[in-house]
Length: 425
Image (tube, rainbow, N blue to C red):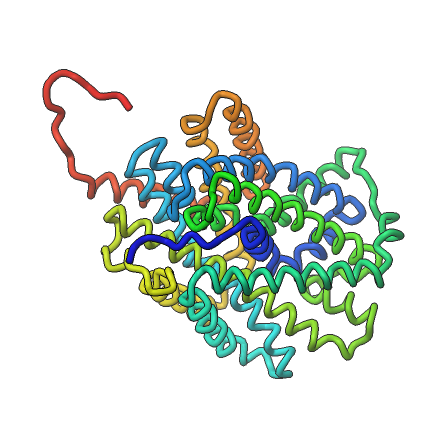
């Protein structure tokens, strides 16, 4: 079996979108943004959301018009040819070397709180978490989507509960608008950190082929989910700023736990840690699914062995999932043995996703109608603005893409041009 089961509806899609964007970032990004931007953090989130929404619209348009497990690489391939499609696929897979290991280690850190163990157990808990995520991916999209829906309901309920007992209405007093040049610089600097929250548009694009009605349901799922994400993060930014549960790096990483402790007492910390672990687990599991579908798509193109095309009885590319597991395992072990900072892996991941978004926006000029091209131009400008804040961290992505494109150029057969006529596509 090589065809995906079309099992996703708009509500399930919204749930998967929310858990794609709200994961490990929920535990630290609101506090980090308040630490960097202070009372201007609320506007920093609005600015970042304004930059991301045009990009999301482009993915919604392309995902509904060209549903494919290949996601962005498929769109870019339709615009510029098979070499670029495969090169972007390799770029996406290169994120496996730097991205999932960070999120899995963050999730594992919450297990040390639940079981009251030392940090020396993080590696063991990371490997256990990875095994659970691989099993989660192998059972198939429909089962996974149901789990995501339950997580989203619990998560939204928890945030609403915190807003109620934390008095989110009065917390609006912490909002201040930047007016001077230094204040704007402080605000815009925070957007580079906040951008991490919105990584996942590309992952959702891989799921387009599994919607029952992609033309209608995919845009609803992507854009509806993003609206919920923005509201959730803005609420937590206000609460954290109002109750002052932010500060240094350690305080920021524990900001939500400190907020819960301040509002309902310290005895709730282990229960909160369990909820945080489940959210992080669901978030990274979606990435595992996205990477697996990318491998399956590349196998169909001939860039990887055709054995990865096969799907199991649940409609999941089981062999592709196992390959993702092996690469992620090596990444976790390397990050543990090398002692490199997690921030380095995060920055490289940001750069890789941003390059994929930029290339997709460029491809959109050839794939959408004239009216939508104006939206593609706005999305491309948004990508350019984010490049300014990510800066040299784009180097990993640029090098990986150039190497992949060179590799595909060398391995592609050179067919001679017959006659004097050229076919322009």
